[in-house]
Image (cartoon, rainbow, N blue to C red; front, side, top):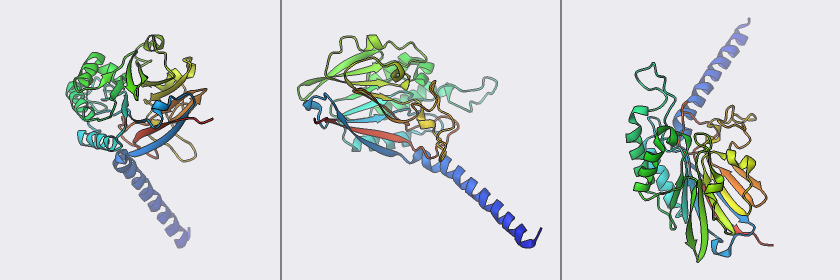
Length: 296
């Protein structure tokens, strides 16, 4: 092998190693804290004019743990509050619970033994949320793995309306807006029929953790369904997409806006993360919606 060729290969190897280390550092240290705000304008057919211009901020999958700090979550709440939304919606998984190996004395994947403390901390963060017409939440699988009743009590204790297969109604400019919360459809049989019982309005806002419910959605009428759970895959490879999405339907509902007739669903990629604690090409997200009455 010639000297020049040997130098070229050596330089190539060093460049590859440097690039790999740089990507690893970025994915573990920078992108997980680079919160983006995705602004979406939705022209909804049948939206009452009383809701024209209504704004909603969505945060999902906060996952308070040893890799998602209180300071970071408070920063996320500051960003959401700065948007001055009319409503704030949280769509589940407020702490990380599970994935520990029973034979190890020290947890490596989550903080099961600190779960009550973590829940109090994340509830205090979420309690800082401010919205003109209120703050609403549904539960996720990690919340139920820990203790659904404890999570519900902690969130209600800081002024958040938690909806579990039920709905409430707020009046906006004299018009009733039903807000529906669907319980986690994996750790519990979600009762969509019960959640929507008595709902009869031209437009409804619904919260769910997993986007699975959209696959067989049958509720009629104009509706915005907000979901999370997938984290967008946490890693999206160029030209490939996310190698893994924790979903029964693979990448189908990994992230973004979906529509069926007059129903919109948005899947948020979350602000927290679970192990492995990296994000690449999939930054933490606060979604911010402005509803508009469709013309014509």
